[in-house]
Image 1 (cartoon, rainbow, N blue to C red):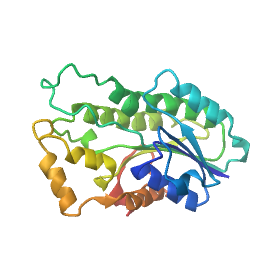
Image 2: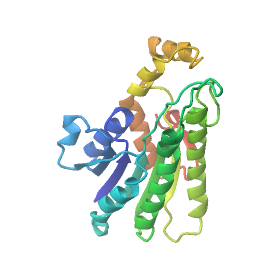
Image 3: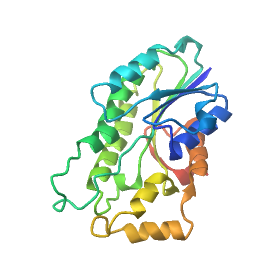
Image 4: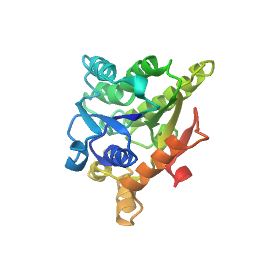
Length: 247
């Protein structure tokens, strides 16, 4: 039995990934605040878990309880995909009014650390394929004005990838890990970006041009690249890869 855990599974890239994993006969457990589209939610191989990655008090217990219900002795492959992210707050530092970055950092950085710890604890001893993938962003290494919180938290996410790979070097049955930069794609996050004010996000005109010129990749295409990355026999362990690498 091939099992995939997807954090952030109900919309955009997450939903597209889940749909394709189900088509490939994975058992998928999707963690999200909202339900996925009906064709996913009602699929017999899909389990939805109501989950908010920003809820510090409950997220570890929810994840642990769900994992405890999995009969891992039947598993032949385990995938962990972290796709949840918050782009707000947006704006240049020094111009924001009493804003809190706590929720953004919890979702983009702290929750991935905590859930990685729980996942690795649960699968470390299994002598099967175990792969983790974190959806990151190009702004992790190339900052954009107005996105200091998003860029910083994504840079931290990249370091989680490098750290797990380093820590697993001496494991007898290592968990493999990679970061995946999806590029610019047609999702609700892109819609949100296009509605920012220029004084809040100076690059908004550029993102509008991306949309108007048809440069946004469909989520289904990006999802296919992501899954190819995960399934590649020469997995890019400890690396940050781009969507184009697997198209």
